[in-house]
Image 1 (tube, rainbow, N blue to C red):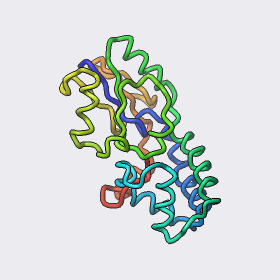
Image 2: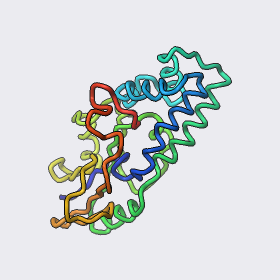
Image 3: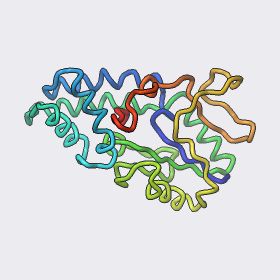
Length: 216
């Protein structure tokens, strides 16, 4: 293995912050003139579209979702809702404790690091330089995992054959005996990041492929 490709939300971010997604959506919807929980539900249904830039950037996406709920936000409402939504999203994308330290250790050991994320405009528009080189966002590439058009660019930009890449892009239950810490070192000497628990929105039957996903 020569490279490790990480997902972002739920892999490197604080799982506890996910509890803030629904309240954030409720308030954003209210600022756009949509009653709760309608806006939150519409975000969930639109996950697939939002992650491949169907509605454009964050502002136009919020407007499109509001329109789908029967609201028509004014030119005065949109900037206020956008500012609130972006501010709240910054809280959601904050890296979990020790995440950057693990990336630094992987680099020290000679591994190349990449980022591959199914995400909406919020993450792509606000991304700032980090330890990830290269990074690929579904919103920019206009396709989602596991589409090979999304995976191939990461390996190519890392100059590593796909078979030499280890992917850490999904939530997984911590195995018995690994302890309760979110980061563990596996027996194969590979470093991985494990959540301490499954996020509430990953519960069986919630926001599956048919109903969308509110995480972007």
